[in-house]
Image 1 (tube, rainbow, N blue to C red):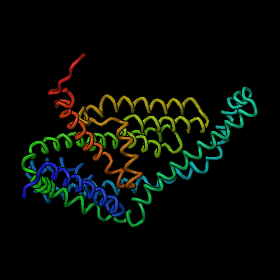
Image 2 (cartoon, rainbow, N blue to C red):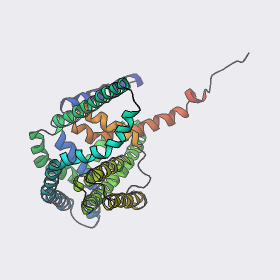
Image 3 (cartoon, rainbow, N blue to C red):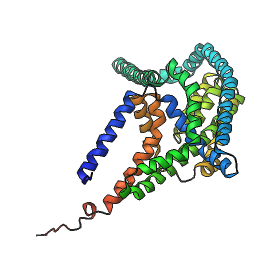
Image 4 (cartoon, one colour):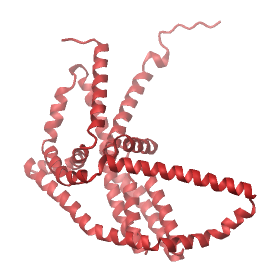
Length: 360
């Protein structure tokens, strides 16, 4: 059966819409499978290297899966009590933090109140309250959507027990899956599609594998560094800062603001503030001059603003599954957009070739 170009376009559009609908309807059960795919993609180069060294694929896959999830469970076992202790201490000290911040901000607030009329002051207070309520409501709604969409109790259990199984089988059969998918490609466009898929893989490899490795190193560095400075909740803020580096500059900036604010609330001693500043200075140098050039290089091709938008959109639409799929989707859309623009700029639609314009 032959198809013309219009029928082929309708086929792919219907297929794409059906895929998105299925993804939306099944978002509640996809978490362990998407997580397993992500881990398998991350670990595939290690499995390939072991296979080249002569180790059987099944044995290498089993070894890698056991080591990876064993380390993950060990880290969770060690870090969970420490995080809980810091969180409990932080909650107990919140009233003291509020008093300290109020005392430090009081002279500044008095100066503002002195220059404002009662009417202006009332408008300012009502505006701040309204915007704060809107921001908090939006943030809570987003968090609620992420949690209810992906991390219910059953999802956590499935994540713990199903993800390692999915990772093992995908990692073992990765090349078979790639070969099978390659056999499904339309033959007359196979070379172009392969070329674009290689570009998508290059982008994802640079960002997912490279940037994820950077995040792990930075999370360990900031967690240990901020804890050693004596900052309350230093381990939690440090880990958040490191993993937040998944979006370049954003995680570091938020972590720095949170750390400095908490250091001021703790008393604002120069030794604590200086220690926090030194940790972030060294971390920025480490990330910009060593980790990112070595592990990521120039392969990413994803703008930070595009990454932020994709993460927010994915979380709002599909919950935690959407967050996991956001960066691969952003990479695919980015590569296809560049491909479309390249073809557009080489066509008569861009150059106006073949059009006959007369000037009067």
